[in-house]
Length: 380
Image (tube, rainbow, N blue to C red; front, side):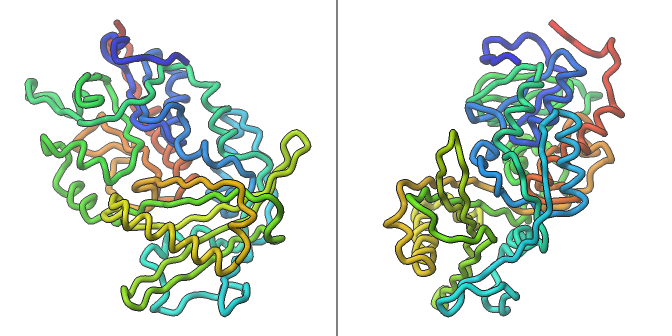
């Protein structure tokens, strides 16, 4: 792997992978082992996306066939060494001053992002002996292509100079430099795709309409680092908040964890909630939701903030929300044969991290069926 700058671009790449989250990193790494000119582009300093913030072995992965297949894939292809066991998941909800088994919501209290919450309520989950931050480090060690950090894709281009040419002809980085490739694999938030293509109406109308109607959620995670243990259970915890005046229900999910590093134990809790992407850019609304989450946490654990050493807040725009798109079997848009979609949000099999891995597998299976003949590859 080599880090590059825009001044290093030489000719056309075979594959440009946009977004270095888990799915983009998997796809780029496997392609870099087959092709000489692969570039992985991301706005962050390091590949792996949100996985770098998931350094706990207690990260939630539901136990099911798709999740097991995803873990097996990482172990087989990248030697990630992920060991698992299955444990029962018993979500609890704080109600009337006590923690009780979660049995469901009333209709008025059900949050609008109900489908996203369901992911955490699986009856069984995997107990992991390693964490996602370690997985992405191991995958990146296998990457043989070029990595371009701290660069935003600001436009996807389809030039009309050649009337016989179909597909994408380039991408614009940071509003200036143009990069060209034979194939482009988009692994970013699906809601952003139409914005990147909007100047030239590149996407087919049916795709644009589906994306416009797509309900996308921004996740807000709060990690609290504690001086001592706060709660014995490591079950998924739920705090429900209903504002009658605003007719608005919110659910805050949390989990207490501990880990040992060099013989020293640390204690922390991780909490998450969701907010509509359309209002999440309003700092006042987002700030109010964070304060609301903290109030609910304090109601359940009155002394928790007195025992907190520090906290970390992470806002991840458009991180959740599933969208069904009619794509070709190889995960390209029919009208744009060189634009592949690797976003976890369109995976038909799973959500979140498991969805990222499964969608990457689908793209890689499709790319193996459409390998560029040697005489069509331009390497300068």
